[in-house]
Length: 203
Image 1 (cartoon, rainbow, N blue to C red):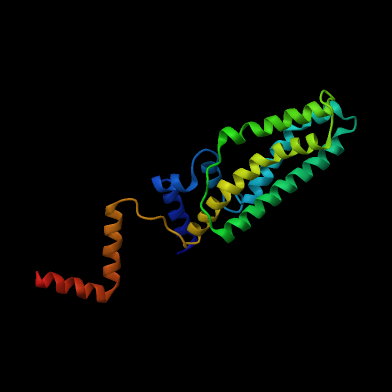
Image 2 (image 1 turned 90 degrees about the vertical axis):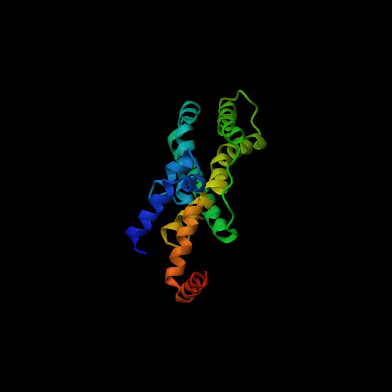
């Protein structure tokens, strides 16, 4: 199957009920519309790190005298870490071949806000600073995006790659599709066709 044929199949699947099960909804559906090279789990992870870094500009600019170099350093580290974890999720997904799991949004959604608030309190000395609290704030900032990529997006991206390469087709969704596939199989197999014709002649 050529590239145009693969793209056509991928587009049809994404617009079908089976595609909704495959790529999910919300963010995953938006990411699935991007080119595969752009929606690579490492890129999605790095993009999450960039969003968190942009949110940190305000507390850094208000609490640090020379905040820009420090922010650039921490933003670079954050983007690298989230991108690397996304790449690791891609490798693990390819190795274990597990299905996508939808993370609990009620748990993941508040985590970066809690981490951001905790980091802001530590930066303004409204909360006594300790290494444990500093590490906890950064973990709460990093964890939600990386968990989403690991549990949900990396497995879905692997399946999208398989569809694009022509190595995977979702199962037929109704009896008509199954019947059509069987008829095509019989037409392509001469032995099966002879058996069917002999059964019809006996009747």
